[in-house]
Image 1 (cartoon, one colour):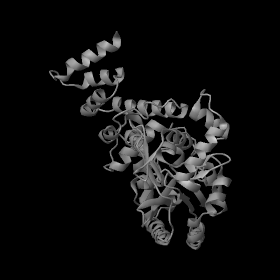
Image 2 (cartoon, helix red, strand yellow):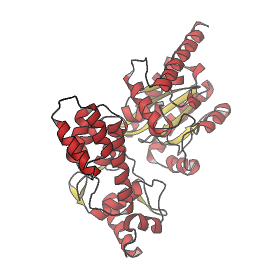
Image 3 (cartoon, one colour):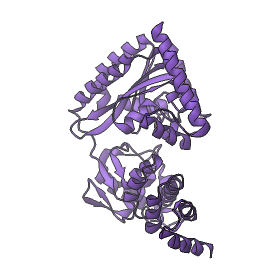
Amino acid sequence: MRANNQLRDRRLKTEREWQQFVRNNSIASDAAWLKQSWGTSASSIPLEQTCAPMDDPDAVRRDFISTELYQLAKPLFDELTHAVKDAGFAVGFSDPSATLQWTAANRVMQKRIEKAHFLPSAHWDEASIGTNAVGLAARLVKPCTVFSAQHYAPSLHEWVCYAAPIIHAPSGHVAGVLDISAPWQSSTPMALATVSHYAQQISALLSSIQLPQNFYLNLCGYDAGSWLGHTPLPRRLQEILIALATHPEGLSLEALHAHVYGDEPVSFSTLKSEMTHLRQHIGDALQARPYRLSLSPQMMASDAQWVEQYALFGKLRDALALYQHPLMPYSQAPAVVEYRDYLHQLVIRALTASQDIDAMWQFTVMHEADYNVLFHLSNLLPAGDARHAALQSKLAQLDE
């Protein structure tokens, strides 16, 4: 009875903190991770959202259970599934981007997780469904618990979730996230220990697997990317990668052609030749029918990806350290133009929502003048700051 009372008190406390945050954007909790995650969630999802965005559960689950990772760790997945089903929990595994690949639950819990879209192909990153343990563990790379109203979305306040990252030791990369979830009344300290234990066991098994090689693309201001950090990747292949990365569901040959070439008079056979060239670089990570990438974001990183993440989480100086020029400024590929505009506006929104004078000044020096940034900065600069004259000059030029 005492334990139940403690859980109820804890739930009421988190509910009050959440209501305070929603009303006036302040939080009494000292947890830095919660403040940051709620801030990101508030700018990304509406409070009315009831479930995670989802694609094709059956296809994603089918693909996952055929992977070497699942086949190797299947005895552990089966053991954990049996344990949590009996305890009234659901279990799930996500890729490094917090997209669920596999879930399991007993009959009662299955109905509940279907309502929340705790299912394969569902996106459980914080920007898609708000604060949750899967998204946090993927981002922070450590075991996480999210209890009741610590979830940003009210529809998840009835849940408690425990998640731990699975690490591929030879490469140091996150291979996925293991999660167990239940109604908040079932909260127990043993749950985090359990999911962490199984994540460590699976991590140990993965040491024998050769994960796909990762590569890093320099896109913000560079006209040539890089494969594995040193081999040049032609601009056209970068454009194709951006088109595919921004359409994870895949693209037909015709759609890919439109995203890469637009109205250019380029034949489909030329695009097919480029795809053959790209496959020489990334092998089986390029799938066909439709064309799509099987590489996770962890395996295919870019400076643009980091700029986006830093901006979303308010790390403006880290973002600007990478975002010194617009993304692929000379490319007119429709997919690149769209992503370039999105990234630039994302950085601007993050700056105008901040109080970081130095970051805003750095942006005005490096990039084309933006009225909203200049105006916000001019209101924040202390009286007598020598930068006022330069700002007024830039504002006047925009008004001409």
